Length: 302
Image (cartoon, rainbow, N blue to C red; front, side, top):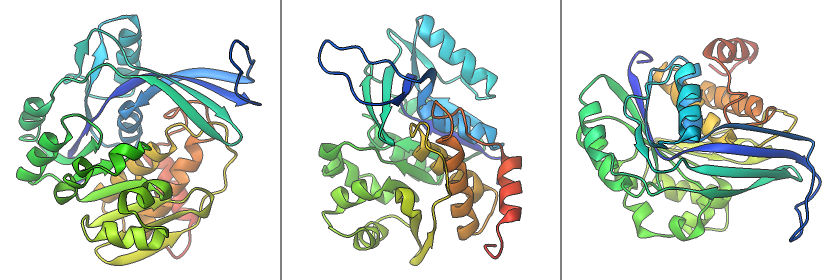
């Protein structure tokens, strides 16, 4: 199934990443950092990660008709991504990621997104094996319903926004989804549970494959009732931006290539560890050849 295309539907950004920060600035203060860069952000990270893993990828997103948008599109095309369904809008989305104390905070601007449902409907008639959708997309339900109606598996990726995580709008997406990716705090907020294993179980009642990342404690998954854990891959943290996106993309690419569950988790965990070693969410995203090489070194997981 690796030759089937994947649709990635969600907002894309120009990410400006400030890393090696000792602290946040006070009002009116300037703080110098040890490293800085820019990279494609948002769902452009997922598209790049999938493309590097050899999965034909079409990005359905909006990009500003401005200099930043031209720069972002040029980078996406160099990564081999189909940008024919990128719509131009007034302004390009911008996010500034501030990395300190082993984590990061993000300040972002998102221009209102256009409705992509008709574009998605037409694209799904081609050879598409998967739709990866931003759960917070303002038109997420229509896109999810279209993917479900045409029999294309849907993957949902969550992000930290407590009000949305507690909303009925999110839960209305679950019946359409095959895959759900989140971290422990997100899983707890969505379910109202206080313990992640119970939260995983609750989510598994609605979505067949639920994958919960646990940071330094690794990852846990509940797939068709089967519970599996794998440890975290050791990594030197430089920039956490996009690690979850690279994780989810690698898991999905491994699924499309027919790998067993534990191999999918090991591959995704390793890929995320490579991502955090570099500045920028997609900068360190690995190729499929490097993922395969890593899996050969892992004993007893296939």
